[in-house]
Amino acid sequence: MQTENEPRRGWVGKRLLRSLGPGLITGAADDDPSGIATYSQAGAQFGYALCWTMLLTLPFMAAIQIISASIGWQTRRGLARSLAQQLPATALFALVALLVVANTINIAADLAAMAQALGLVIGGPVLIYASAFGLVCLLAEVLIPYHRYAGYLKFLTLVLLVYVAAAFSVDVPWGRVFTSTVVPTLSLDRDYLLTIVAVFGTTISPYLFFWQASQEAEESLLSFRGRATAEARERDGSFAHISTDTWIGMGFSNLIAFFIIVTTAATLNAHGVTRIDTAAQAAEALRPIAGELTFALFSAGIIGTGLLAVPVLAGSAAYAVAEAFGLKGSLELPASRALGFYGIVGAATLGGAALAATNIDPIAMLFWTAVINGIVAVPIMIAVMLIISSRKGRDVFLLPRWLRILGWLASALMALAVGLFVWSSLA
Image 1 (cartoon, rainbow, N blue to C red):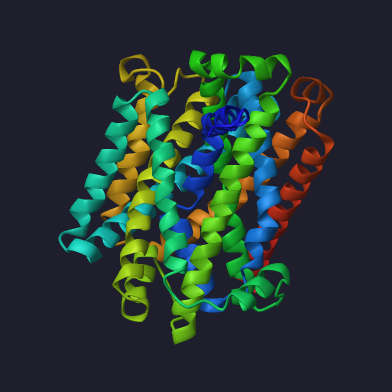
Image 2 (cartoon, rainbow, N blue to C red; image 1 turned 120 degrees about the vertical axis):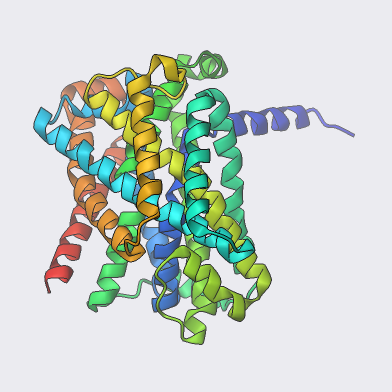
């Protein structure tokens, strides 16, 4: 028999599901094949010792994403246009150019990993698979309006659950995992520091700032979202929607990364496999150790997350360039009304596909992506914090003090990570 409160609970559940969007998609896109390779290497090389990084980075990651999203929602424009108010034009153009380069290399690494994963499962020409994946992602962004495309991306986030299933398909000493998660293992070993920096750089990436800010701007402009949140706006509840969406998205992202580290630690590290160069290599290494099921789950996750991440990488580059140069651009517009914007999407995607077809070392691509992302993230995060910390910013964005503190701490954390990276490389 249905009680009086059951309809209300169902209504609240539907409302929560409807509120999930840019934050969830952004968090899921963070676990792209390049990220999977980084987390797999962390688990393979150091076992469970780096599980604590997922707990540490979560509040900082969520804070900077909530701030970026709030800027997009309130201003109804992307992050690059807001950054233009804080940075000289030459500095903004340089950062955007580095972002495009990093995203293109990242797309190449992701497409290569997706193609290799499919090749491991069914065999066949990897180069053709990489080109086909790039073309599919490009056509989807060009031909499908944002309000429909966002729904498809949200559905694709479910593929990340395969990594939870993979962790529970092998024997894991959960007591040891819990201890490693809540009690950090500290070391000045060069490889250990480099891996921490790589994990931080993979978790807190500049393209995520630009993507979520632009998507919140899109959501703010769409009439159906406006109707769905009209009551919340009257109570100044837009921050609550953004915060809930982002915390869930970032928590989901770090949870999946946590399970990737655990899975590879329980299998590869436990059997003496301590070197993983790509996500596809991690999947291949799992096959003889953990069995066909774990291998299949890992491979499916690589392909699914790539289909989610490549459009986010290309789209964030296009939004940043379009806003920096004053071009009309939106995934909601048809290609005929935003040729420059979609030209950038195509150039980033096809450029990545072409790069994936070369013989460039995938480790080199991942390395330089991490370097560029780390360098670009610090000034962007500082500029974002200056936007919301100015007198005008405090009046416009009305963000709580704890969020501003976390945002500055996140900026300091990334600056420290880049400093450690440089020091370790020079040493």
